[in-house]
Length: 591
Ligand code: PEP
Ligand code: MG
Image (cartoon, rainbow, N blue to C red):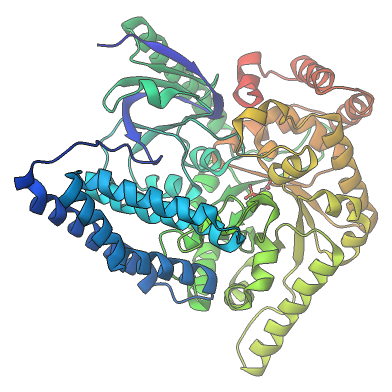
């Protein structure tokens, strides 16, 4: 048995889990290359044919269901299907099996390499990009040859105590895995605000991301302790390490239970300032978690997760029914539904990532919706109709300038006119607000505030764009710090613009759920903080232990600081002096 090893990464979701490793290796398949005997030729050709047929079927089933707008991904899937069915591919690989006695994997890999080299030589950039398609097709055939799952939905039910260890998980992978009994996640790449981390937090399972090299050492079935509090992972732990892990896990559960006891008390400061503490959800099933932990509203419903596991975009009725169900569950509380934030790192179902050379700066969120009016219209109609049954606010993501916002408002007006013409019942006055997550929106916040019903600050993206750090890249994660002086100044600009225009401001990025930042938010006059359900009780308690006037004095001092270390020290000292939160309680969010 190999020795115990400790890895360090980024604590992405709090808690400590003990379990067994399940390797989910979605990197390129490693295949064995060997020569076959002449009497094995037919068998090998048969294997190849079966793998190709299976690949064609898989693509058909993805594509067959998908009849949305997506001309681009439709045509890409179609192109992949054509490559697979192309007899030349099969014939060339068969020749290699027959004449050079290569096994099927080796033969197909050689054909794919030759094709790739051919595409490389072409100077036309369109053809160069198609090189990725060849790899995709080759990868699918190889996975089918070696019997490795190509899509996460194909995994059988996992056992209790399973810790998924992967190079990377897309948001879809993470959410699909959430239907399984996963005890913790560990990934080699990713940052605190990447979607794997967000999903792990909302599922309340511990996660550590950015754990370099773990796949080289871990094997399925190995024992593992995942400490999401301090970002460590112990592989094949000793008995003493296991005992320590168990104690830390119990202490964490104990502390969480204590916080829960006071969950129903309002988040009111000692000097009488009220903050609404709301929950972020990806799936309607998470509402119960939010309400059970004392959440007073839904501050962010990430509706792009409606695409999960579907191969056709949701239609108007899907939207309508989902939102009506939501209103039933929340019983009159306010629900802020964010319109589809597709694209960027949130690639779902039939969307094809390779189409975007720079996804975070590409056709995502409101840009995607305005370019795909039928997808957007289905959602807006569903929302306006459902709003009759609840307390809804519509929130538009990634607005970067007033022109874009006005375009979206005009679109919403057109949908209203259509509903009116068709004699359908809908709410004419749903407030429409925007997420502030692009620096250009900050710089023009005064202009936007005149027409927006509210602002909600999406700090995950705002920090990404403001500090130029890819939110999914663990190598630049050290710069991700919400207490950067640049972030404080930015937040102040936003809240000042909102106060002047007398519109409410919320924060719904991950920063909102971190107790250390509460004094800053109170000082800035944020009215609503929206976060993963697990953070709600401790955040409410932090608000209750502070005075807003003292926080305002702190902010004035913090704004004089030059570095995030100075700001961090100042805020932590303040919190220690004023509240009952201990260092280890603060560490849960200071990773
Ligand atoms: C954000 O960017 O802060 C946010 C809340 O949206 P998302 O994390 O879904 O991009
Ligand atoms: Mg965002």
